[in-house]
Every structure is written in structure tokens, then in C-alpha cells.
Image (cartoon, rainbow, N blue to C red; front, side, top):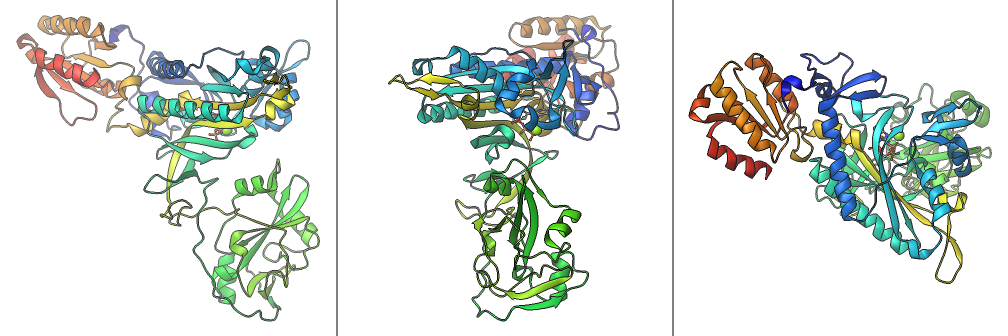
Length: 565
Ligand code: ATP
Ligand code: MG
């Protein structure tokens, strides 16, 4: 490809609203342009990278015998009403009406669409195990689209769905997909940790996220140094190492604690450690009033809490509700005589504590020397706390390390939620009707490209991983009016184009402009054809090299084969 004919509008400066380095690079390099918030045009350079990533996916799916297909973007609301997700999915769904007033939506994900096709077209256990996938544009009206391709409102996703007659088949499909995903990320040059994850609104258990560590990441993952434990912080477990020495139960005493609306203030005021305080927080879980208890030095994890309560929606009660329900303001709420609570649930850290401080059920008052069972009751204990960095992991008891990261993929065992609600049954060996068992698999393809850039930034540009680089070789001719240079550059272009994607900078531009653009293209090999062209000598540089190296044409051949081979 001749660069003089290529459309790559580069910029010296990134727009001021670009925060993420990958976003800046893609704008400056002329990979993408924003059309409206969270919606991008993929210019030729960006589209080449996208197509390469899609090619890797297609290749790896072929290897595990998963065929590609394509679903429509425009979907009828009825399909989603059937699964019960039309309301539940919330404001992220782009909804529209057609001329007859029929409600429609733009697909944010396609569980329903695939389940419907299977319900109508798969009849027997003999047709399973089966899996299908598509690479398709998805629409989600994200609350805060940002960071370029990392969180768009229109983005490209690989979404796959598996259909099984037995749990064992599902497990096997899941493992196949997991291995394929690992190979996809490896080939795309994106370092990922597969981590234990929450399955969100998808209604499934057993889910793994692929998290790419990056400075800009919106997620946090907790890992240990041996790599034997890795979880999204939303789900991470840790071992609580605190132990209180047993004490005899003392008399319950009410004390005034003015202006103590935080644990820190309260601990200071009463001169006790936070570990002697039990926090009481009122949550509304669907319609239930749930009092949640946790030791003063720990924080409640609402994702875990949601799972334990098996509620669709969980939120902390606001100030007005708190006062109305408990009769007390924040800091005064407590578990003693909390008859107003439908349920009292406590974190495991509340077990084995003696003579603790709890809210007295009255604003600015606490009880000292409260004891479990004697003074207050707990309906259920569970792990509902947020793990802290440095705490021992639950597998090898090694300190947990936190890393910010980007969720680039998510796979989960869905089970029979959709097939049951949408009537996708099959006949088993005995002719008995059973719901198909599903798995669901997704990669944010465009997000993955941002993750690749984030992980491969150089001082002035990017070093694209080989397999997704827009061009493998970038030939940069220094002076377009020198015939010997043109002759050599054209010769190299012709030769390498037989095997590789070559970009040939044949523009009448200054060297500085050409090199700056080359840094943004980030091809794995840059060949500069300059002064020594007549002697058959060029300069070669990889994006991560500090300096270019002079090479003869023979040496260059060897180098190219070795690097790209
Ligand atoms: P997130 O928590 O980041 O919103 P999600 O849980 O909503 O992600 P899934 O529904 O599991 O994401 O979608 C599958 C994959 O699609 C994700 O792993 C992610 O890589 C990608 N993805 C999700 N939302 C976006 C988005 N707004 N822009 C780009 N990619 C996205
Ligand atoms: Mg989301």
C-alpha cells in the first residue's frame, strides 16, 4: 500500500477530552474518529487492525469447530419480553418504535435471539453439543461512554453461545472456549488473567473474565504472586486474620456518641479499635428491609451481598428511608431490638467477637458490650466483605495484590435460564423433553484493541503485536527525488508484499514528519531507505528499539524472516 494513497489523518496533539493513552493514540494516528458520543468511524488504519483481530478469532473458533453466523441488529421487544429482560436490562438498551408502533431494540447482546433459533430448530440430543458465534456490532447506551473504544455505545463484540444436553458437555464446551480465548489473546499480544467473576444480569453462575492489566482499567483484580488465585475484586475472597481474645460478657451499656458519623470518629471518641465496632447498614433488597452487619474495619461488597440475598436490586437505604424505618440516623442504627428488619445478615467477621460497640437504635447513641445471641440475633452469616490488598488469598494464603485492568472477555455457564423461560427443549435418549443447557462467551473486540495499545505503548507511539499490526513492514523513503532510493524502496515493497502487509511511505514529506507518523503506525519492522540506498544498505528499527540498525539487503531478508516468519 502506498502511503500517498492511504487515508491516515494524523494529528500532532490529541483532543483535550481524550484521557486514555490508547484513545489519544488512535485519534492522533488516524485510526478512528468519533461520530457522536461513544460511536466511532474506523478509518483504514483502524479497520485493518480490527479485521486482523477478527481474523484471529475466526481462525481459533474454526479450530474448536464452532461455526460463525450473523444475527440481526434490529430485534423485536417481544423476544426480550419472553425472557423477562426487556425491563430488567434497564437504560442501557437502545429502544425504538417502527412505523406501526411496534417496539424494537438494537441488540446489546444476543442470548434471546440464539435461544429462539435453537428452540425452533434443535430437537434432539443427537444435535448436541453445539456452539455458534458471531462477530457483530452491539449497541449499549452506556451511562458514561469514554476512553475511546474501551467503553463505546456502539462496539464490536464476538459473542458465542453453546448448547448442551448434559452438564458434562457444557463443562467441556466451556473449557474449549476458555482455551481458545487464551490463544486469541496471546496471538493478539494482549496479556490477560482469567479471573473468577460476577455474572451480572446474565443470570448465570460459574463465570470467568479475561482481564488485561492496564493503567486505565475500570476494573480491579486480586491475584496472588503464584497465579493460583485470581478474581475480580467484586468477587474476591480473602482470609480474615484478625482474632479477638475471648472475654466474659459485660453489661450492655448505652453511651452518647455525638458527631460520630464515621467508624474512625467513633473509634477515636470511644478509644477502641475499629475491630471492636460492628457497623450496621440498612439495605433495601427488592422490597425487603435487610440489616447488614460487618466488623468496623471492613467494607461491604454489594455484589456479594446481592448474590447472598438473591435479589434483583440491592441498594443502601437513603437518609429519609433510614430514619423512617429505623427511627435513627446514620451511626445510630443497630441490631439490638431491630424488629423492623425483615432480615439481619452479617459478614463472617462478626462471628467470635466479644463486648462490641453497636448502634443503639437512636441517633448519636451506641451500645457498648453488645454480644451476639445475648443482645442481638443474626439470621445468616456469609462472606459479604470486600477483600483488602495484602490479606491472604483463600487458596495458597499468599498476600493478595490488586491491579487495575480492562475486562476484555467474559465466558459463563448460563445453564437453563433462557431455555426454560423461552421453551427451548430437546428430546433426550429416552424421548423425554428437557431444557437445553447453555453457555455464553464474549470478547469485546474493539475494546481488546485499546487494551493492546495500552499494553504496548512506546515513547512516541505504539508497538503493535505482530498478528494485529495494521502493517507488518513500513518502508520509509527519505527523499522522493532520489532515484536510487525509489528504485530500492520499490524493489523491497514488491518483494515483501508477496508475504506481508507493507506500507510504503512515498510521500513528499520531511523526514521528521515521516518518522513521527511511522511511530503512530507502529509496524513491527520499519525499513528506512536513505543515503546508502545505492550501496544496498538500509536502516532497520523495531518500535521498541532505541536506535535503528544498518543492514545489507541480505541481512534484512534474514531479519524479516526471523521477526515475522
Ligand atoms: P462492563 O462491566 O465493562 O460494562 P459487561 O459485563 O457489560 O462489561 P458483557 O456483557 O459481558 O460486558 O460483554 C462482553 C464483552 O464485551 C465484555 O467482556 C467487554 O470486553 C465488551 N464490552 C462490554 N461493554 C462494552 C462497551 N461499552 N464498549 C466496548 N466493549 C464492551
Ligand atoms: Mg456493561
